[in-house]
Length: 496
Image (cartoon, rainbow, N blue to C red; front, top):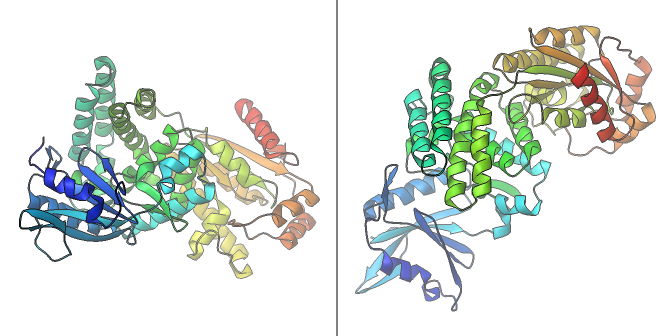
């Protein structure tokens, strides 16, 4: 509902002379709650004088408060983008863009502008997002969630039901009533089933002041780094949520554009930096809620095919397939990591199996980033026992939450193979052992860069000298192309 006349303010911000630019030097972008004016290397965001059930920008003072809140919440992830809150000042009958500290008749958030092609929805369309970009973003989100303020009293069953009710009302105007009612019924049943778990997450500090709108269009690459921006400042029910509910929007958006590999990588990388396997019990619900939100926003934008696909995903997420555990072993350079990533994408509940990698877990236990090299002192038998014990405990926790797991480790020791099989605790377990000649493994290890593994050519030769024969797991020839290894593994896992 429109709650005020901002025509004079809009005219001021649309005028290139306001910013000292020639005619045609300002571009305007409108949403239902904001108008953004792009001028040179700056962007000026005006809150529109509107009122909805979830926000109230009806007065200049409310808009000023919202601008201040937007500046504060977004400086957590994008401090170099969010510069100031600037007043619109009246001078006689005219208006001008004032300076911070002056009294205004309206207010704008001043931001540093970035190239349009830096937006991740544009980068996704052009195919320029890399796996390295996704890992960097997941790392950033994990750190952001670690530092985010715990939000007491939020993220409750009632808050989730508020989201469900909003989805039902909006979807009911866009999709067949019977389908909307079925989704609403199943979603409410899932919330009821998980009510105790939801309460435990609230009590345990998993509900934090998050981003709240973490999808591809709200992420930009600036100076070579991913920066989430445009976080929700106007409603705590949207921003004060479970950290996995925050992450779920990004996962759904990757799946929406057909990049399930990036969705799966996002989850595994995030949990590799910030373990939270018990929370996976809630992930199908969170993904479904996010997909329903995406369905209505894509429908409103006229993207009907995408909206239909998102609506179908919202239903599918609530009916995940059974969990299973796969362990992939082999000497360094046999291609375990590539195989595990490919297997995980189509295994179990969305977005795919959690990949637990011994190289990454070793770095986490040492308190360093995955790609930071470790000294050989971190590779003692005791250190390795701790790594495998942690991997297996985390695998058991994820499986108990209903999520499939793929474990990537050497597994040359029979006791380690027995331990990972025991971690399955009743779910289906399969062990794969990759075989590959030394000369190929040497070449592969020599060609690695920016990887969590510290194995070098000397390690490969040491492993070869020790030798290893694994009879109880399925042996796979990994000497050919990775696609051949994947085909062989999938063929056996279907019938094994």
